[in-house]
Length: 452
Image 1: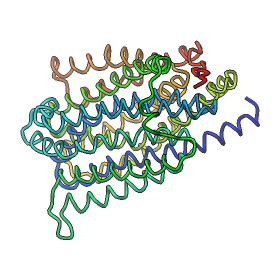
Image 2: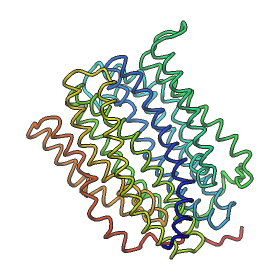
Image 3: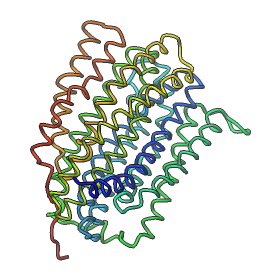
Image 4: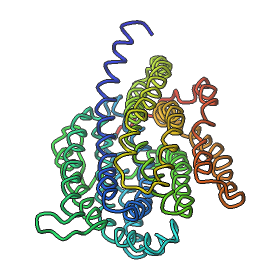
């Protein structure tokens, strides 16, 4: 890649990655604001809400796989300037996402106590979490719909608008949390339930804004006809990508849920410290997620336009970008770790856990940068999501999860040892990344020439 090509690459990545990173940060702050507010209330509230939110997290594994599979195809058709068929894949994402969200909405609304018992046996956490789930379940459908449009918004070149939407929603969420959790200005102090009500308001607001955007966007024409459009060829193209995306998401996401189950059974101190560490990691990972999202769009557009050699050059360039992202992650942990440690109202034992969890996160987040940018950005852009699914299966389910379960149930090793073992999966995957990249399975044009 010569100097001029690097300038074009850097400029394009900047216009995508910066807004996407900011949006990812602001989205993380929506969840983090709940933890921040509840962290000043009591330890049981933050632990219970963290566990209860695993229901939404698991739902997003399904809806995220749906939108990412659709996004891969939309990006390629967008690069081809075939907006009509790009819109048909958006409609497909909406149909599938609404169906999935209804399933999780029903489970959280009707069976909140049994759901909470999956994650913890402590009655106090179950009671708080069940009340939270009954209320927050109504936000699931709003969120699933909004994410479909936000995905298309980024591909359509309106990533900056998605940042504005996220900035508005995080502001509303923080303000609503403050008034509803603590009961300010004459409002009742609702505690964890207040956080649930604010989440509903935020997701509803986000949905309204993206619907207005879609209505005004010339290249997006959603109608009853497009929402009910069916094509065997399009379904075939979609289902070539979606199962691998879903397998990857479930393999990774369910492992996080297993982490929470183990920590939940290790007690409130372990649960609270792991929850706070997770919040810190989510905030810091925003830079990496922004770059990963940008890489997927950039390479997807090139592949859809038939510029395969140029896509390879961009892929090579992302290795240097990944290293820089990993260093940024480490520096951010070093800078924010002390602030996180001081802020939360945790027991002395939980704070001890938190300190060492943050130290190990430096290694974890460096490896995370490399793996995420390629397995969630570069490779899927050409429909290659299988590698991520396979790597997660072996590194997580054949190594990290069994080893941590044995450490916990059989050897009864200390909390911190169990935690480190659980988080070795990203590091284990790292040596195999370059080997798969050089196969160039991901260099593929997925579009069709459709007359209709």
